[in-house]
Image (cartoon, rainbow, N blue to C red; front, side, top):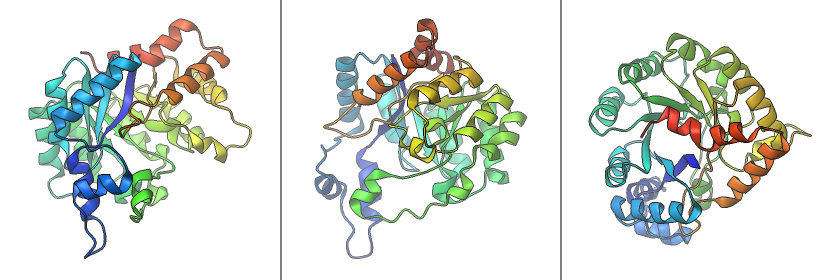
Length: 297
């Protein structure tokens, strides 16, 4: 199998969180890791090696590594360079930042990263913003570059653990706001994680309208509590029925050590696929083939 959603919690990630604490209480990366009770990441090479060992134990062939704070492209690029046959590099971008275009060009053109991750609710911008269009235009110029857009409910567990505010605005996370971009850039694959994270109907509508929109299955999908009576098997049945088995991509949302790769997500999703009556060859597309087609080795 392949995993399209693994967070790369580098030392820079923890350092960024530590600097976001209130004045006078900032923490170093080591202090943040200690407060969380997690394993220290070490260098990007160290963390990449740890992920390879964990993925080997789990039987995972390839994985997308997501740089999980803006500006952490270099850490992910080092991991990909160390294990190019195992990892595909994703990076988080704030398109409203003054250096967003140059940073994206460097990440995609020089560092070889292959997916731009947008979190409009986190940075509070509209997907209709011309600066977003500029980023997607740049992605279109680099064949094979995808755009990941987090929609729906957004909750960052590590921020809660550290008592950091999450002043997000879910108003900016409607999948339908992506329609014009996906239609205008049919050659760019757009990935919506967590089945739209609560905006499932809207994500299905968008995927039906735009054949370049993919649904990522990652996380526990606790957003189903917003849809009384909806089971995970129903989610897979509808997603495969609307988007087709070629546009649903497996992911776990794994992130930190010592937990490592989250097998419980995989087990639940395999059971759901089977309960949904998805054919075995289509299950294999969801679990591995679609990732390889999106991001050829």
